[in-house]
Length: 438
Image (tube, helix red, strand yellow):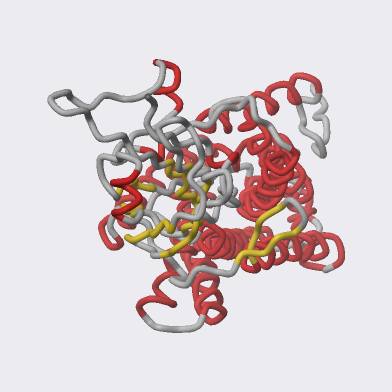
């Protein structure tokens, strides 16, 4: 006789895991694998909820906070069907852009004098997770690719790509004007999210003033960095390789400062859980759509600034040829200082949006996404604002869609593989200009 089983989140209930929400779900079956419908299922822990099993025995809860959850069914139901207990626990650990699902199963009570053992075949035991185990690591079967799941992953990839594009555009501007690849750019993203957390949770400001506060702090750090570090290094004609090593040291120092002052846990910018919105086959929320819209409008605004304003044209001139720009009367130092300030402000804004979208920010969020930022700007074309957006969209969509056929832990590897293939065909990137040699 088989114990009641749990199945993949994508195949049960109505919960589809996204970057914003995880799922606690399962299927209630009798020993004969018959679904048990109409049973009340209660959730307690970081969040609480109550639902009823469907006709096929499935149930699901959508959760936004990480932590340990306990799922409970009525005692009389547990006794009637011979379950070992009327409750089971599962732990959800949210990670950056990972699809979290907690799959719960209620085991059959052991026969008198016999030890309890997992039910089903050996392959079944690998596909199901006992209650109390690390169910967040559960990987669903990738053979059940549905249209709904495809659309959900495509949507998540677009949202991720837009946010990644906003993170990357400032890095690309700095590279275009100075030739420096900044390894501390990820920490500017983290700083923005943490400052928004300070604004909402410590200073008790609304989300909009907190976001403005975070962006201003980010811009200020960019200005201070250029005055105290990058400006003096440029005047001493320190090479870009040595400056890049300085950015690596700055990145490590900022990471440990963030961890010292804010701790190692995830900080939620907004405590409330937003209402879900169903757009056809796609599950989303209003904050996710707003964050994506702000990211897109900001990137378009940067493009307009570069092509339609005097300062923007001066920035492009410095990017093309700094010596010629200086000879024509452009103050190169002032332009570079403005670019550093703008770059850090954009990174801070992206950190705020990312923290809202993911419902949390951690001390190492920026560094975990740094290689994807480099991949986005390289794929799109170094030194181009439009290239950062296009490259980021390609990276985001490929990374999320790849989880339909490969484990989610390998999602970024697939995006980097696409980067290598594109650069083999077009080394300068999608929008980059081919350099003359000789």
